[in-house]
Image 1: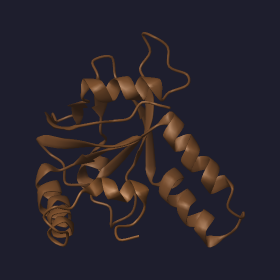
Image 2: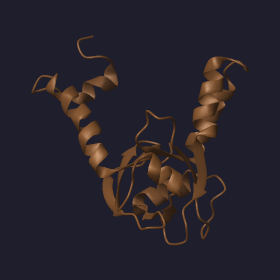
Image 3: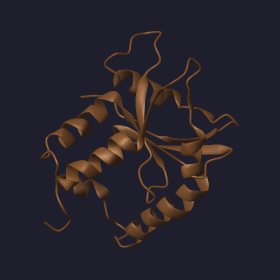
Length: 167
């Protein structure tokens, strides 16, 4: 089983778009890069997606290889394959962590999510997301609270691991 990203944190973004990656995230990126060796800078893929996506999704090389294999398994010429290729191949940015543990986010990516001054990192298993903190607080936290408000006070989310509640 591969390592997973865990946790959340805020990091400063400088005028050149450099932002430190949480140290624990760097270890997962190293483990998820088959070409990485001690002293190297791990590679990753940042998927920025279409106009509906207001965050950056960062994939380890192993995680994006899994996505690519599933895309490749779709019928050539199908609309699903074309759209997924556009999203994961065309609307993505290959990069690596620099020697100081930072990412350099190009202006295009920072503008896409209106990122300046500070970035919010949150783990998502074999990926992690980079958000503008205010967007995350107003969009994602509201979505989470709305979902939780629909559940009973004594609800245990672990029930989802064994199937849908009530089954």
